[in-house]
Amino acid sequence: MTENIIRVSANEMQDTLYTLLLKYGFNEENARLIAETHTESTLVGVNSHGINRVPLFIEYIEKGIIKVNAQAKKAEAFGSIERWDGNFGSGVVNAITCTNRATELAKKHGIGLVALRNTNHWMRGGSYGNQAADAGCISILFTNTQPNMPPWGGKDSRIGNNPFIVSIPRENGHIVLDMAISQFSFGKINDYKLKGEKLPFYGGWDENDTLSKDPEKISKKERGLPIGFWKGSALSIVLDMLATLLSAGNSTYRISLNEIETGISQVYLCIYPEVFNDTTLQEKLINEIIDYTHNVEPIHPDDKTYYPGERSRLRKTENLKNGIPVNQNIWDKVMMLSR
Image 1 (cartoon, rainbow, N blue to C red):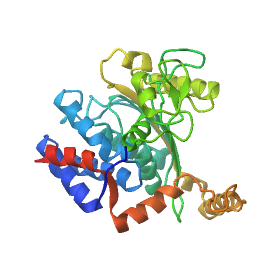
Image 2: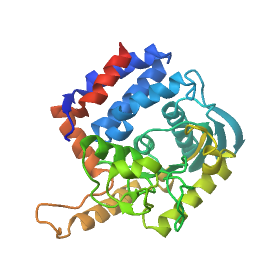
Image 3: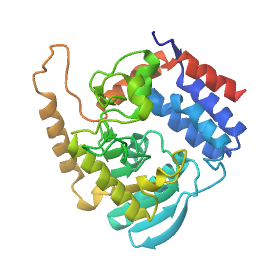
């Protein structure tokens, strides 16, 4: 089995998604934001949280899981810390709103934190790391999820793969770490399934409690493998605790009581580095670290090392030039929905 790939321009994708979102009741501004975010994620090669998510996103709207007209609202404020309620609106729009607010607080206080409850999947977390970096802020962002990994030593899923993002602004390309706490996100596992390929490393357990590289077998029970084994398990639990406590929202346990993942909790922490008045030094130090990690002999002669976010920038440049690779079946579904 091979994946049937076509190439779609960024403009065509964004215009198609914008039309689709207007059809489903979003106002022009929010339709534009969501269309831009899904297109940008696909441009940098994260189809799993870009174009591939669109049919499921529309299904959740139709089921009433995502409230099209809902907006995130500030619930409580404590100086540079705020709690917001997403009111079960679009996870993308809520994330953009809360990232903007966290950067505003950071520019006023040096540091700003927004904790968000009752929201939906934010798609690609790196989108908001880039957003914060574009605003000149360092960011630390994370979300809890439905249970899709077993705690280390357990058989059934009780913890989430809780994506974790760190971004640092930089003149020659932002540093953006965007990672799930599972070895592979389930969106990425589905990508491999669409291609009919095995995972390059173990990604979770099959029905026989055996570690597997088969995306089909892993998906059946959604038992992902934590990064770093027991260390990733512990990190997932702590991130869930922080998101729940800071937002006064739902934990992975409470999210598990829903048939479909919704009502998740997130944290947006931003720092404004210009308060230190040494931005030239900061840029120099970051570049020193990048140069040092680049300047290493690769294990494979044709390979090289990258800083977090570097390959995404290269992929975006390539896809802007040649068109974005998209699964034909996914694109056909999106086109059908937009008619």
